[in-house]
Image 1 (cartoon, rainbow, N blue to C red):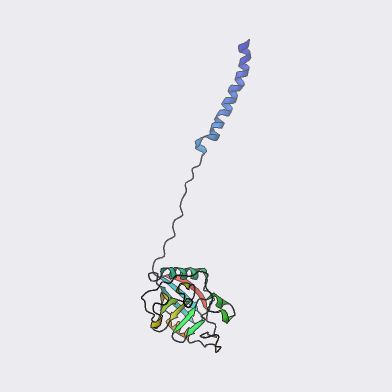
Image 2: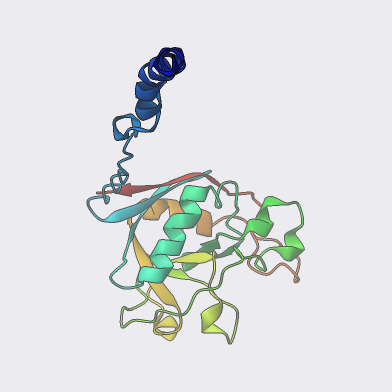
Amino acid sequence: MRKQLLFPLILPVLVWSICCGPSEQKASGPSDKKETVEQKAPEPAKPQGQPHAVLETDKGTMVIRLLPDLAPKTVANFEKLIKSGFYLKTKFHRVMPSRMIQGGDPNTKDNDPYNDGQGNSGEMLPAEFSSRKFERGVVAMAHQEGDPNSGSSQFFVVLQRTPNWDGQYTIFGEVVEGLDVAEKISKAPLSTNPRLRNWPVENIRITFARVEYR
């Protein structure tokens, strides 16, 4: 009698183990684990060729060959500012007829001429002096008087040999196209206000800027 009573109790247990056992093994089995393989994004290709800054102005286009071998930090900063659109609508705020033009001040975007020449990008650059002479076509970084490590965004284009500037400013480029455009800008009519010395009354702005590699 005891054997007959045990059989009905054992049978449901066997049925339950057969039905439920494999499903538990499947839920926790290694075949369901998905292996994640991390893939690194490919590094962007480095530009080929020499960097050139193309500045389109109200008087025409200038092309400046940048010289990273001469002033790597200054060139890198200049490229960064161009690509960010920093120079768009900035004005050439200081000129010396047939000698020099200066631009790159963000303050020139407003209508207050008295703050022109005082602006910067918020980042100061160490001087990168070289033995390169200040000859016609040279492009250099302006800085505050007495502080050669205060260059930031303002730059100037030289239109005649100026020996007294040698070794005083960071040269970072040279105009290879459009030097006649710089000449036109340098001959713009100047203000007669003694507080606005060398300030052109005509608004001559950078209308577009880009970096090309040639």
